[in-house]
Length: 181
Image (cartoon, rainbow, N blue to C red):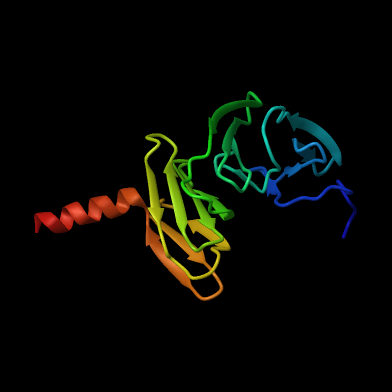
């Protein structure tokens, strides 16, 4: 351990910038703070005034353009890292009362996926707003989700399963191709 960058704050998640020079975390006010690792100093704060609850998940897009935050109950925010402004905010896009236990974005920023404590996977297309729900994927919480580099597969991990799932777009294309045969 070199030294604390931020202490005294309960953090649920942390993310590196695409160039690995900055760290994104939540501060005691619920804001997203950006720390320069080499300089060991705060370089920006994403104000979350008026945004309810804490941030449970923080992701930076692979291209380094966007910051994605998820509060664990279904609210997703998309921040532009160049302008430092909130560009999209999705309200409670999930149905039911499932608590989110994991969060992933596809490399092309098109698909958001959340695993739930009830063992379901909820997906949202960032461009079309189409929602897909995979119910009963596991009898236990989905603790980790990861999207493949081509955005065609999503892997989920729970206590009892490691499963690969086709993303909605890939599944629809495959089914259409099979129907043509």
